[in-house]
Image (cartoon, rainbow, N blue to C red; front, side, top):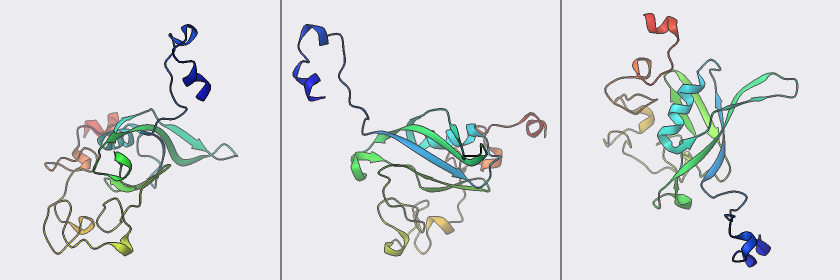
Length: 173
């Protein structure tokens, strides 16, 4: 790349844009769902709440050709200078309705399973208030206020979310 930078202004390079091999905001995210029947569209919709963009998923197969239940997405993280590394990160542990899942990727910051915040782990958590409703005495994990785990709205739950990928049979009911 040093050679390209040195010759950037020369005539033969004027038509080219100089890019690195990988940008800082792009990550390959591996999503593992405990429910393999959850649709790709629902997982993609969840990811798009937390990142700028997410590619179509690629299913990951083992060496015998069996699907492992994992999906791989190329995502672009949202820029946010208040977060570690200058980017907002999606939660490492999440649920879509009754289906739990987790995700991991390169340079993923620590994630607390108690308060569901980024930057520390459960054993180091000092949070005494809920990050969902703001009340003292409980955490987000035990909060009684329920919100849709797919779109984040508080007027319905996942099973009634309009962003869900409903099958024809489920839409009939």
